[in-house]
Length: 147
Length: 492
Image (cartoon, rainbow over all chains, first blue to last red; front, top):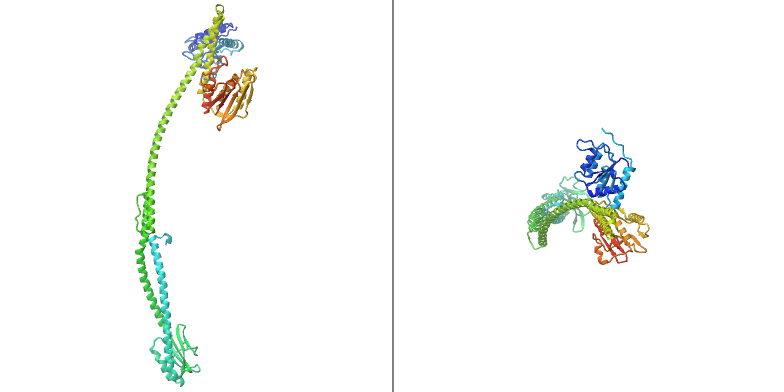
């Protein structure tokens, strides 16, 4: 596995557990960072008040839409608005495929939109494919220069 | 001067009366004057003749002896008549023996006698009388010329009389006409005045006074009756108008109230729609997450604890998983139904035949092992929302596809037909069909006429179809019999 990490932004502990399990079955758990709401996700990416943020950006953000405090679309908006994360790959991974969510997601610059299947077998397959694709197959944008 | 036809009737009547009486009087006077003149001329002519004959009888001796002095004396007696202009005695040879006046000029006395007789000639009355002795031997001719002043005097007199009579008669006629024309003109004027009052003031209560039982009286009566009828009708009309106004006001009020109600309803509907929207959104997100946990952790149990579970335990967990997945499908279908209700309609001409062919191709691609005979009528078009109509048609054709699964020679048809003068589209299959007893349940949400074991499904598809057709202002109904296929009709 390369050094790239997955940032999983997800508030539902069940979903976190199931996602981790699905990723674990493909040996990808070490690369997963979990943020349980939008604020945590933004803190991780840009650093909490005063801190500098991570040395390295994740290879991909798996972003749920319904989140406490700051919702997924707002997180996406902030990611795209910041010079450092403008090119960061973001995959929306959520329960709904309401048309307006899909449209809003793509309009705000999501790279992909995946609806979580109810069937765990399908869910596992989706998680595996996402991990493989974004961690291994996808060529990430070059890391922005730090000030 | 204004044209005769524009004169007031009074003047017209007076003028006609005066014209007629004037004409009669003029003709009568002319006849009178003519008669007078003719009679007078005859009279003076015969006077001249008598006088001539007496004079001629007295002149025989003078002529017989050619006694010029006697002859002159005889003729001189004419001086007593101022009208006598000239006279002459001619002898047998036609020569003048004596003249009156003695120094008469040649233009007064003709040079030779002319034929006997009395006649008017050049403004004079002249007469040539034979002078004879013993009644047979002619001695000469007496010529007398008299002026016609007497005639012209008589003519002037009778003319003056005629004019005076005419003037008096015309005055009398005018006075009479002025007095009598009122008998005719007064009722007409009264009628005209009433008519003016009616037309200018729209006052139908006035009546024309009746002044006699003649034709004008009849006219007045008819006019008054007409006014009575108009007055009645006018009153009726006013009543209707008032009623109408009142009804319009009532209707306006009613409409305003209804409009207000509609506005309130629309606002409520909007609120309800927004609520439905929010509800569907949260269902879409929140209802599926627990199902994922149920299915996911059941799967975890099956995977990690398979050894600790017996067959019944594993079976139970499988059922839990199947149920959660089925519920996910139900939620998805319900969301689709809600989406159909919420979706904004965009109306355009839709090629239904092409759409049906696309759907059929999709079905055949998904299940290539099935062989279904399709008959799609070409050129079927309708106005509607292409996305919604696609969902409806997809559901109907998919339905046919599903329920012909156990049919050895499955057939599905899409066509149009005429139902009571209205065009209806038809989707017909020869599949499992249904019992007409339950036809009304066909389109209800979660209503199924087959068990999930027989044919799988959620019971939302046809409800969605009906919702779409209803939103297009159309109707949908079905005919069928058990194992004899089903036919769906819809109008748009």
